[in-house]
Length: 202
Image (cartoon, rainbow, N blue to C red):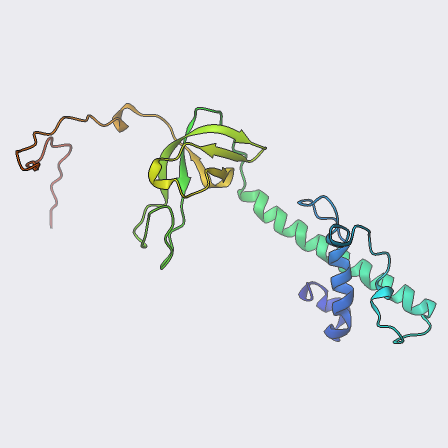
């Protein structure tokens, strides 16, 4: 936030930190439906002058009030410009996604080194797992999935950004056959079918 105002204030960042804090805490936040200061204290903060310590300034000059108001207006304009710029970047790649109950979707996982997520570990772990059936729509952008028992420790509601639509294909249906188990509960592995071939010329 200081970088957004560096061309206007030209240094003395320590003096402008309270003003930037005031402007941010009294700006409307769409996720909570109010300003952070009002959410914390139950009332809006009318002026940053009340942040001064007792006895620090006995009288507040009108010039100081006007100068502070102008700086807060500049800070809010710069914050709004930065938010609009970031929103335009995000909207350029964002596409609306909506699923219906009963659809099957893939779940996006982000495996990282040393992090164990969704039972997948390592850099060669798949990016998507599934498909899973959608059981319920939660709000506008969240869905409840039917997860298998091995993922019972994971919350089953996910944001729409983590889902990818699955197009059903008959080739994806596996033809299960009974195994011929031996007396020691072992079976012989072997190829069932040749699916494709390729000649590589060096």
